[in-house]
Amino acid sequence: MKVTLLGTGSPIPDPNRAGPSTLVQAGPLNLLFDCGRGVLMRLAAAGLFPGMLHHVILTHLHSDHTTDFNDLVTTRWAMSPVPNPLSVVGPPGTATYVDRVLAMLSDDIQYRLDHHGDLDWEPPVTVAEIHDGVALDESNVRVLAAPSDHRPVAPTTAFRIEHDGHAVVIAGDTVPCRGLDTLCAAADVYVQTVINTELVKMIPSARLQDIHDYHSSLEDAGRTAARAQVRTLVLTHPVPVPAPGTEADWIALAAAHFDGEIIFGTDLAVINVE
Image (cartoon, rainbow, N blue to C red; front, side, top):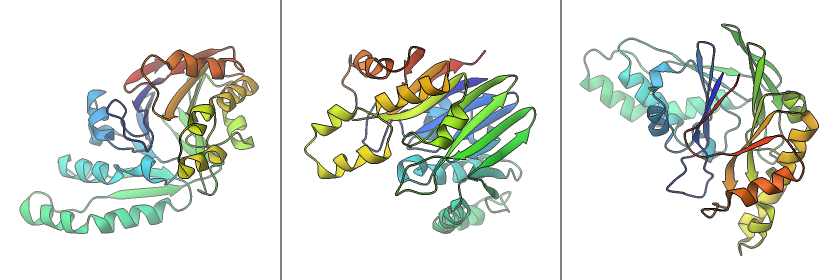
């Protein structure tokens, strides 16, 4: 398997970090987890176009994780010479979300249908809602889902991708919880969104202080990784935006609780799982 961090940013705009999105290539499948801002630019940089994705999997429906889903739908449709249904997997509520996105795109869809004589179908999208259990099982690749905890955003789902004796976990936004522990058990790679608690506390914004109770801290991520005995912990979606040259300080906070490999994620970083 191969994990590419397409976007490692957060809701806070950062010129060096696109919004949350992770590409997992397992066997013949290209799996895209979340669709943050700039996802198609980063996908192109990784050598893929939207039509080459087999499944799009959403951890939850918070705006920063879904901002460019509409771009993915439109671009895949407009670039496909024949109908190429987009398979979307996500927690309960995903089907309604997709319907609303398609409704929002209805004017643009009609513009393109009116203009292009060879484009005589609307964007085909299929949705499977899963919160706990087997999300996918095809081509010797299995994706398992379990509830995560990002309340009051609910439901939110974490995923474990298994192939050829290896496992990768995409946690999304969550605090430590039973579902996350179950998925992470003995995983090769665990990708976790994180906040730096002490730095956030220094920011004079009541709204930013609200994020403490529904995101994993660096220490939380380290404890989860240690408890589950994962091999590699990947830190992504850092809040606040890290100052250049401080990456080792962030890693140290997680390393105080986990003695395995820790990677501080940057856009287009690649982790090969062997």
